[in-house]
Structures are given as structure tokens and as C-alpha cells.
Amino acid sequence: MNRTISALVLAAVLSAPGLAMAAEKTVTLDVKGMYCSACPYIVKQSLAKISGVGSVAVSYEKQTATVTYDDHKTTVAALTQATTQAGYPSQPTSAATATK
Image 1 (cartoon, rainbow, N blue to C red):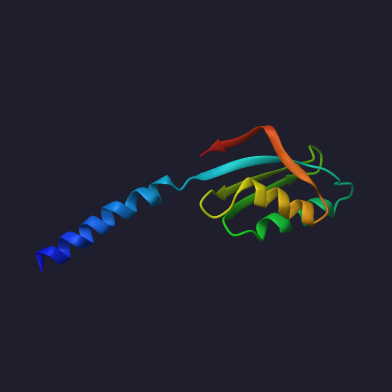
Image 2: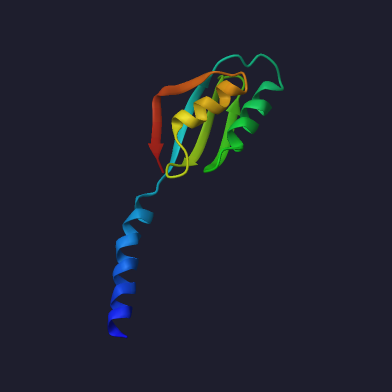
């Protein structure tokens, strides 16, 4: 009985650092090709469909999309690929990521 409890405690301790390492991050993407009022909606929807994306704010005026995401579930490359596939190529801005 004590071995079972010890094994469970050890397993819990060893798995906890993996959870602690997950981080919510925010990236701002420069988005090319937005030329009408529907474009930001399409960009937002393409990003929101990705697993791990928490929030998306798209600025038509600045031609950017700011995305908050879980870095254990998705990557910046997946985000840029999603906008590109929707017809709006993007890339991280020079001040690309900030951890929250």
C-alpha cells in the first residue's frame, strides 16, 4: 500500500513540471493583403480555429493580428500558416513574442 502511494506521489511530482512549463504567449503578426472590411473577420476566424488559440484581435488599420495562444498546443509557424492559407500571408513583427 505504501509503495502504491509513493509511486502515485512520485508520478504526480514528475508530471507537474511539464504543466508548469506551459505558457500563454502573445504574438503580433504583420498581415498582408487586408483590403476590405471583411478581411479582418476572415483572418480572425482562420486563427481562432487553431487549437490552443485563446484570443485574437485583428486591426485593419495597422494590418496586424495579435494572438494569445498556448505554446504547448500550437506554434507561431502554425498561426502564420493559417493566415496564409486563408489568403493573408503573415509574419511575426520584430517584437514578436511576449510571455504573459
